[in-house]
Amino acid sequence: MTRLRALARAAQLSPGDHASWVYDAPEQLRTVATEYFAVGAARGERLVYVGGGDVERLVDHLSGLAGRDRLLTDGQLSVHEVSSFYGGPSLDPRGQVTAMLQLARAAAEEGWAGLRILGDTSDYAADPDRADALLEYEASVGVVPATTRTTAMCVFDRNRTQATWRALSALHGLQHAPGWTPTFTLQVVDGTVVLAGEIDIGCVHELRRLLRQLGSSTSGTLVLDLGEVGFIDVAGTRVLATFAQLLAATGRTLRFRNLSDAARRTFPVFSLGEEQCR
Amino acid sequence: VSSTVGTWTGVKFAHEAFVFDSDDEVRARVVPFVDEGLRRDESVVVVAGDHVRNLLAEELGGRTAELTVFAPAETFWHGGHQTLATYRESMEPLLAAQRPWRLVGEPIWLATPGGDAWSRFEAVANDAFAEFPYYSLCLHDRRRLAPALVEAQLRVHPMMWDGDRPALSAHYESTDAYLARVEPARSARPADARTVRIDQVERARPVLEEWLDTSTITSRTGEALLAVYELVTNALRVSGEAWVDEWVEGDTVLWQVRDRGPGLHDLAAGYAPPSLDLSSGRGLWLARSLADDSSVRASASGTAVLLLFRADEAS
Image 1 (cartoon, rainbow over the protein chains, first blue to last red):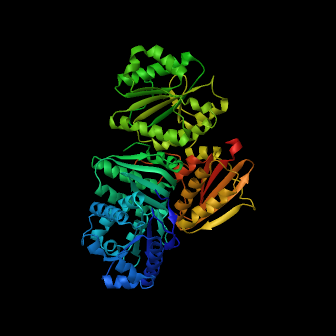
Image 2 (image 1 turned 60 degrees about the vertical axis):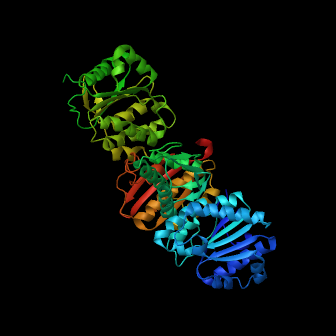
Image 3 (image 1 turned 90 degrees about the vertical axis):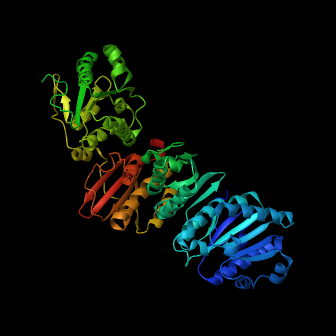
């Protein structure tokens, strides 16, 4: 699992990374995408650019990418409109994770050094009816870079995605989110929800939203690993206790595993403990 | 009065100190107390040290099976805050049973290091449990306890056993008066104290972490950080700004968090266990439980909470 880090340059990314990048203006997106793909092109990676608007406009975003047209002709680079790439206007989170795994394997079979994808899913994030599906997808798609030679960067337009970009950022171990770098990350690893970083009153809104989404997209017992939580305050612990209560009300169990020292300090305040539900 | 509980009607909290010098006194006071509770169909709970439990087991024989709880006190102490919270939690099934209960409790931890703080929690219990149908008979063995510990117990129990019946204690003090007497004395903040004003919650942890890097507290920095941080977020919530001071006195690091809010005029705030309702405040309770000692002082200009952390050698 990638530990929480702030990301300064898109060129720093390498296989195994699942990063998020929040942008404020289209010019920023052009710069970031160009820099990101230039590294991949030099490495001989398969490059996939997915974004909003028509394909022509997306291709134009990469006008600064050296050898862009040749990359397109050779099939090393492909450009896709977001809803056609993600299977239509509604996103199927699980199906899409499977599709991404297949894409990564196909890139390897075709002899590319890896898969390098940049996805601008602001269209989904901006739509209240589709944002939850995107959150579910982002929480679990980390398995692709974790198990294949894939570099993934998810970009979001801050101006269009309201507060959702904050929750989305927290689903990535590597984040570029100027003005508000999330202090924690939530990732689903082998069916376990792993919380890491620092959880305080400044990010409880995002944590609450992500947990509620997780609660509604899963069934049965949920396991929360807290081994990498370096700080958690009363407000953050209250969110976990409330979530445990919410699940219990529907007959489900929330188990806490691997409590860090920080979690051990606040958990007794809410009578929470390891491997315990209430 | 023939009753072992005086005029207690089983509706509200009664809190009696029973100080004894001999096993015979224990038999004479406690056995009728237990038997009366069983006869009245109350829940009877005994949490006491080995010596008293063995004595009672001998006297009660098979009747110990009728006790709701008959447990050792030896493992009960986890600091005042957590112990009182455990008491509170253990009352849930007793409350649910919807009948009065009586406790024979022997806080043997009074004699252990730091255990003397329990008197403050006994004081706070008078208010926290006031509405419960609960009689607490607290046993204090003069043969084991230093005179000052016994004296403190008489100040925090409204009633005491006079050798014949429960009577009002002449030594009893109000909770605030008692806490003001035993909490750490307030000395003036020295001129070389570090002070910072915080008006944004994001600023709080970086500043505190920087101070802790150069603090004489080295092994409990996580506790100190969390405790002070909780006080700062409380202050920001009530008044939008917080002042944090830090200074050293001997082997103790003192942290003070001040605000200009309406004021916490309850000295006992942060002693009593948080309500079981998840939305209720817990920050002050946690901060005070993490510190070695603490006090809350309110004035017309706001509230100041003082936390003491002893340096590692002494803690």
